[in-house]
Amino acid sequence: MSTCASREGSHPGFMVLAIGGSCVTLADVRRQYGTLRLTGYPRGRSIHESTSHTSQRSWGTLSFGFAERNPDCLSSIAFDPAKAPPP
Image (cartoon, rainbow, N blue to C red; front, side, top):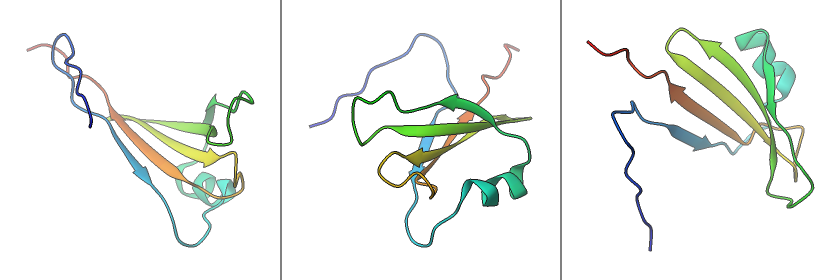
């Protein structure tokens, strides 16, 4: 069973893709997207935590997750579009 929480105001959405298959390294991601900012890291609470590196784009942020259980390979990509300014 899943639940959905409503938000105040409008939000353009948020999407996370889980990545599998061949290994994509942090160096591979940096070659494609340039400088990345470290935005999250495992805190030792679970092997399901990840290290996140984020690229600021003109449309919002793109974050790349590297899971604690396999830290050398990309495990997820999160798209977080910027909220559009009010008309």
